[in-house]
Image 1 (tube, rainbow, N blue to C red):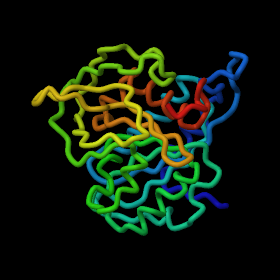
Image 2: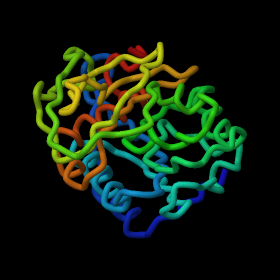
Image 3: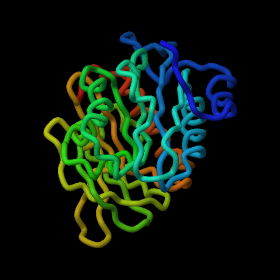
Length: 265
């Protein structure tokens, strides 16, 4: 299948022209794996510096020894309503180890379109969902996307430097994550619901209500593993090595390339 990409050649140069490295993972014998990871990144929409975030993710994976092959799709403009052409092909997800959703289209609500996005995931295409992906399709009446995310959120609180409390210290994604790490200035998303197949990995407390909200988690959606984080608003967050390492490990976990990755929890 011919893959379409709608990003600059410079972004692809970052992904493809740097020296290759081994994947940040181990095989069953404890030796480093040399597998590559085939990543599809869907990015665009309102409110964020998506070019910067894309470069930061790609460079972070290289820094942490990931041999990633990237396809970047940036469609839909900077508004809150879009139905991107890439999803119109029912085989849009074929061949990828993991799809990173970093798009922000809150007012797209067409059920048929949304199900064209969620169906390949339910069938087994693994996913990573970042920040405003939680508010994407917020206007929709159906819950298909929210079930994929593993959480329901419709609003966020103010930007601040939030402390992250690790709930699952033994989870492979959180390996090396310092409990109590303080974020770069970012938004805290209010989580209304945690879906049944979701495992919360870390939380942050609201400065207004003192309520703890999930900020890192995993989810099982059909046959797909999903890693999610509500952080990712500011460029400062995408310059934070602690966040980027967790995002890298979460991506590899979702792709099935971390120890214990066969377990959804």
